[in-house]
Length: 118
Image 1 (cartoon, rainbow, N blue to C red):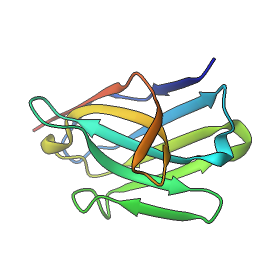
Image 2: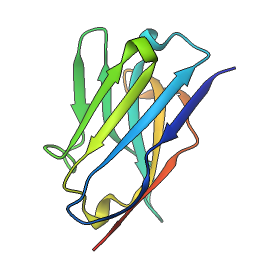
Image 3: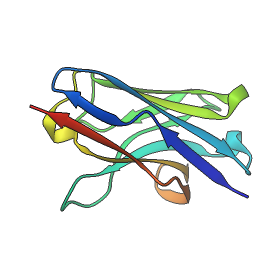
């Protein structure tokens, strides 16, 4: 059974930090580009950041560049999103995903809510 289980969301004040974790199971972790996406209320889901562990490459949305960092622990099949200097506009449900090239989504997690208060 494929599972992507996110954790680490919560309520934080603007300027604060959170670290999201996503533990993957049921598929070959190294075969995929792992990513974080988010969906704010009333908005479409958007990519936050993706990480291709086989080549060590990342891409990061302009809106979070310099504040968010994606990294993974392949041995533990876990991908993280370190979020610093959070802003109210970062409030969203954050989803972990196993993707092809950060474009085609193969598997989704159930999401974890991040709320940033001003």
